[in-house]
Length: 108
Image 1 (tube, one colour):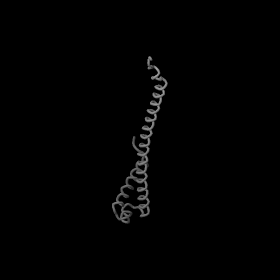
Image 2 (cartoon, helix red, strand yellow):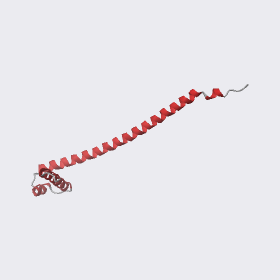
Image 3 (cartoon, rainbow, N blue to C red):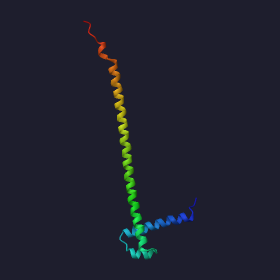
Image 4 (cartoon, one colour):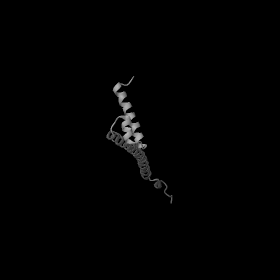
């Protein structure tokens, strides 16, 4: 299904903006870049700032996702250990209830 014309323009526009910002980050002259692309230097600065902010947010989101994953793994280990402890306590309680030493009385 083809994209609507407005969506296609927006996608091309975003790609164009990213391309221009990458040129700026590679030490391209802002004045010549603004003339070449037909936008003001202030607009280029806005694009650059938005691009860098978005990149920082993406990195931050990835780090948070990794921390969340680590937290889930840790919770799993804690839950498994708690279950093992509970099972061992139940086993000890059953062994104590059986009182195995009372069966072995001497015959004297």
